Length: 145
Image 1 (cartoon, rainbow, N blue to C red):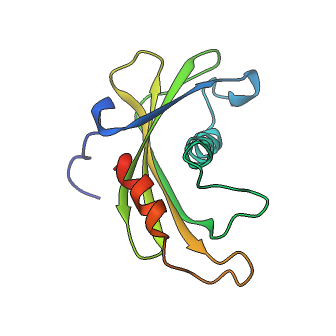
Image 2 (cartoon, rainbow, N blue to C red; image 1 turned 180 degrees about the vertical axis):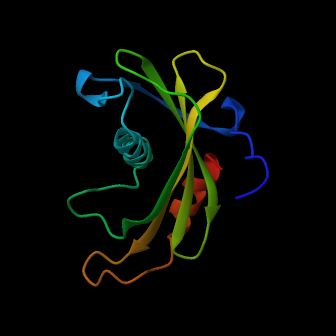
């Protein structure tokens, strides 16, 4: 590996925000929030937005989004009892996939503690085969792009 890392994006890169309260169990043996918790926050931010936008019906919705890829870069530790704000934007929309950009910030912090992404492929509920994203969904995605 060579060269400097690209800096994490600031708050202006995100369109929708979700406040998350850390829990005692989120800390690991090193005294900070464990990396697995960040992925839980990603899942919560994306799916809560999908529910709020009327796109996710967990019981009967069709199509459904399957997570096919995630990633995260960490810059600063967070720890219980820190408040956390998770920002969400759409980075790209393909024929059947969406790439979400997610920023994790300590409450009131201007610098991201972590930055990640989350890719959904939208599939038919029964066959689990990729399907084109409906036009109404594309319009909703454009709002937070």
